Length: 165
Image 1 (tube, rainbow, N blue to C red):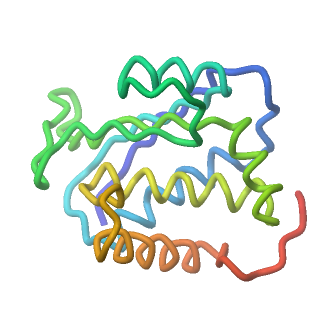
Image 2: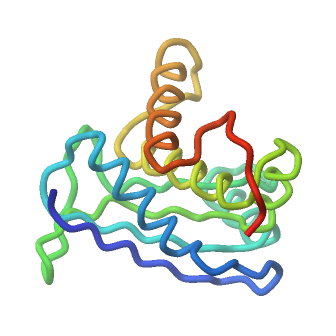
């Protein structure tokens, strides 16, 4: 498989990011591209934000004045992506992840923060590659199956017992 560059920037101070999270985010991005058989070098930008920041972005970009867990901003359409002229890598898009929301959802769903961040990253990567679940139906089912396949490959299946790191 070709190389993937995942640029991760922590833009918040509300929630301490545990060690290993950056590696997990990178592994999650790589696993999705590998599962999809993506060919060529790729770049993804990931911003870790807090609830206030993601609410502002959600409102500005989607006209939804609410906190959400993750936002995806694909730079391609129908499998066609611009290339970074400096590197030749396909620019897939941006992921904006609320660490604060991920922590509360992990508690709500009864798993650890690590699984939640992995899941949100996988979910968002699938959006960058053109998958959608908004209209429900088979598209949503297909996307969910792919999410769980990658999560299992990462060693973070849905029904496993978790220990906090």
